[in-house]
Image 1 (tube, rainbow, N blue to C red):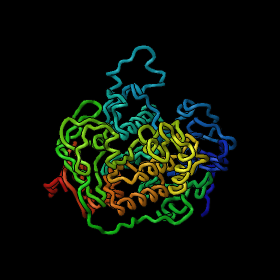
Image 2 (cartoon, rainbow, N blue to C red):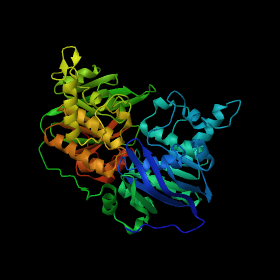
Image 3 (tube, helix red, strand yellow):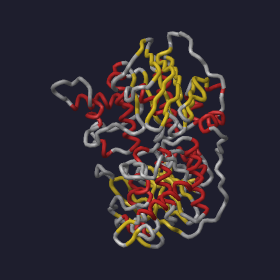
Image 4 (cartoon, rainbow, N blue to C red):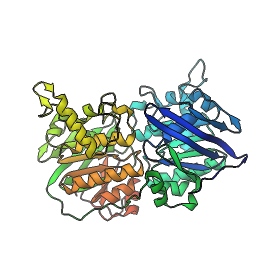
Length: 517
């Protein structure tokens, strides 16, 4: 594919030429060229580990390139810190959030600014943040502590933080990951309005249909090199982009065979629970999942999905109701009891909940088997057996890692997710709670995750798939239930996107009365 070369047009706001960045044993960026024009949305695509984040971290002042030049608004720059990049009008919303959990939304947004210098009138700035969030359609409580927010709400805080600083060049990493279809449409209207006012946006996303819809041009990275640089989106197809990302043809359709579900594995009855703020999150929720079926749970972020997953897996207490797994109520029981009943959990936050970041790949994959033979030898862990077990999972789940002793915090998002999937699936679960299993992953990694989930379904596992990816839910699920304000509003088994979308916003004409499936 031809590689467009920019001219000396005055509308080029960012020019990155011949960028090289090396880490020990890794060539992350290999002479990459990237050009951003004023008033455009430029998509940046690539597999996890392809070098996208490294390239953007260089632009944002977090890394220094080993070679290459960067020109911003016609001036060569040499950023020493993110503060330098912000001063140049460049703001990056990172995939892994840079927030202080114990502080409020407003305090996080103001953190690092030169003003207010002496006296902090929080109520005044709360009002400013509220106005800004409403202006861009990303409502969030400015007085809430960050630790009380869902992952989606934390992402909104990061976006608002950059907008508040007046960034003219925005690097947005997966900004639609937690939005309902109607909200995605609203965000795209907002982005178009922003570029119409002269702002420029770098849009990092694994959702190819969104890239095709919103972007003007696209740059694709594969293993540190550019396979397409600044190509007009109108000249390529979704299949073209997928092939440029992973170097092979990607299968977009899910091979789902029709099957009759078996006995009820999970039965949730009249479940009530509170969120981290002490407010009602689940309000009498009812749900069932049977052997050999995937039940999808659709809903806008913050409607009780996280609390439901936490209660089922023993991470949160409920105030009323039952969580019956294979005939036994495990509500408010220790996590270990759920594990013994065959409950596996793929959490939304794979870094802080799904893994121990500073421990090795081996330590992370044996977490459910450390006290079982052959890994356990009395009171000790058999290191040889543990390494053999980890090596087997590494090969089976195609985990790309230098050594099995590598801390998992050094892995890409896709490889970290493979570590978690390997641990959870290898326990042969009766019930799997999969919460945002493909969030932030590239198209190749998503294909692998979908294949693993379908294999578990076909092996007889009951799977509750919680996702804001409506296309994913429809493709994988046998039934899709919709959660709204802590209740199941109805369910759809025929993939009716319009009906699901209406229920996600609180309207449920013709929804089934029976919530038990």
